Structures are given as C-alpha cells and as structure tokens.
Length: 229
Image 1 (cartoon, helix red, strand yellow):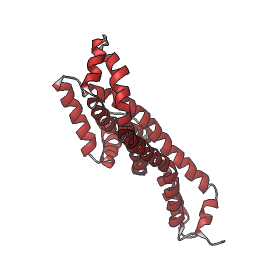
Image 2 (spheres, rainbow, N blue to C red; image 1 turned 90 degrees about the vertical axis):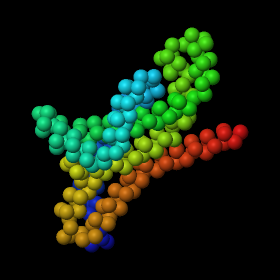
Image 3 (tube, helix red, strand yellow; image 1 turned 45 degrees about the vertical axis):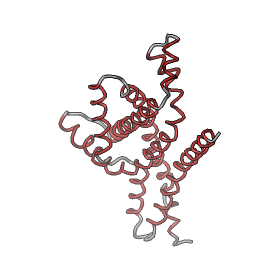
Image 4 (spheres, rainbow, N blue to C red; image 1 turned 60 degrees about the vertical axis):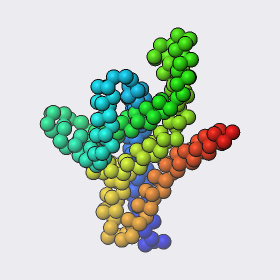
C-alpha cells in the first residue's frame, strides 16, 4: 500500500482540501437554488398574466438562459461584463449569480406550466368567494400546482448541483479545481492519482445527487398511485 494511489489522500491535507472544495460547490449551488427558485416562482406567476409584453420579455429571458451554454454564461459574467461595467466581483459571487439566474429561468417555466394546469373551476370558485389575484395565487393555484412542480424542480436542482463542475473554468476553488491541483502536485509520486481523485469526486457528487433522484422517483410513484386511484 506504500505506493498505492489511494495514499494521495493522506499526503498533507489533500482529503480535507477536497471536502472543503465540495463545500464550496455545495454552498454556491444551495444559495443559487434558493435565490433562483424564489425568483423563478415570481417570474412563473408573471408569465401567466394577460400582458403580452411581460410574457414576451420573460420568454426571451427564458430562451436566453436555455439556449446559451452555461460555460459561455460563466465566461460572459466573469470576464466580459465586469470589465465593461467596471465591476469587481469575486468568482464565487459570479458563479452564484449565473446559476441563480439560470435556475430562475428554468423554474419560471416549471411554475408557469404548473399554474396553467390548475382546472379553471378551481380559480372560478376562488373568485366567487371574493379572493383577489394575489390570494388566488397563494391559496388556490400555487398549492394545487405544487404536486406537478416538485418532480421537475427536483430534477432541475440536481442539474444545478452537477453543473457546478464547471466552476473551475472561472478559478473557483471547487472540488474539481482542488482535485486537479492535487493531481498535478502529486503526479510524479502517484501516477494513477487521477483515478483515485476523480473516483472520490464521483462518489461525492453521487452522495449529493442520489437522494434527490430517489426523492424524484418517490414523488413520481406517488403521483402515479394517486392518478390510478
């Protein structure tokens, strides 16, 4: 075992550094998911309004973040926009902003789809008892549509977490970036160190995302059981 590649984790604080890198990735993903989901719910509600201008603007916003690759968005927000607008933003802030805006765009479509799926007689009943549009959204359309939104939201959350693997491109000290540094620093002593480092990173990402996958499958089975009566 003295020459085993697994010993790369016990050189200095390599293992702790990897865990800290994972924490950075998880923190960015968590904040982006919370901010993005909150903004996405608001934008999704606005996409159901009667204003064609509002719907058009929000549709363009969605298509922009859906069409442009995430790596291009990271470069745009980190290298180009700060230089042109004299902004001094850290890589972590830029990454959180990009993922939050992406999450909000995708979430708005999930919310819109869920809201328009609520049967019309439900909202008509709310109007009949005097509920205003905000109360209709809060007490009728949102609760009714949540069961349809949850599986898609879980899937989107998992995608955001996995896409944090791109953070090394803007020099965020995430788990991928730390892993690459460890491999390069120990490549002569541990020639198969990359196998062990990336193997551990795979396991760490699996631990983060697999519970979400199980939850999504559980919700899908539950919904299917309800529909089958």
